[in-house]
Amino acid sequence: MKGDTKIGVIILAAGSSSRLGYPKQLVEFRGKSLLQHSIDVADSLHFDVQILLMGAKAGEILKKIECRNFEIVINDNWKEGIGTSISKGIFEALHLQNDLDYVLILLSDQPFITTEKIREIIRVKLESKKSATFSEYLGEAGVPAIFSKETFSDLQELKKDQGAKKLILKNRIEFELVKFEGGNFDVDTAADVDFLKRLEEE
Image (cartoon, rainbow, N blue to C red):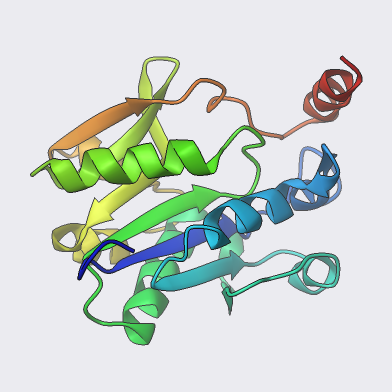
C-alpha cells in the first residue's frame, strides 16, 4: 500500500438480511450491487491482503458478483453475529500474511463509500499513533475503520454480536475519527431500497 506498510482489508458480507427478505448485498444502486461497489472500491486501492467474508446465501451471492482479487472466506457461524465474522476475518488475513501492520474493515451495504474516503481514513491512521481510526456519523464511531496490529488479538476474541466498537466501550484502545457523510445509511429494509431507487431518479 504505502512503502513497507502492509495493510489488509476485510469486507463483511455474511449477514442474512432477515429484515429485507433477500440478500441486501445484491441490491442494485447506480448500475451495480452494493457488494460489488464495496469490492470495486477496495480492489482499486490494492491492499496487501483482501478478504471477502461471506456467510448466509454465499453461493447465491457469489454467482452474481466479480470477486476481483479477493480471497473468499466463509463464516459457518454467521448466525452468531458480526463478532464471529470479524474474528474469522482477522485470523484468515494473518494466515495469508502474518506481518500485516493494519487491517481495514468495510461493510457490504454502504452505498456512499468511496476510494477518497478510504484513503482519508488510512491517511489519518498512518499519521496517528493511536490504535484505530473509525468513521464518524451521527456522532458515533463506526465503519469503515482501520486497526493497528496491536488490536488484532482483541479483534480475534470478539464473539457473537460484538462489533469492533467493543474495544472502545471497554476502553481498550485510543482512536481517531474521520467524518463520513452518508456513512449512517445502510440497507436493512424495503424502505431503504426505495430510498436508493429514488436517488437514482433524481
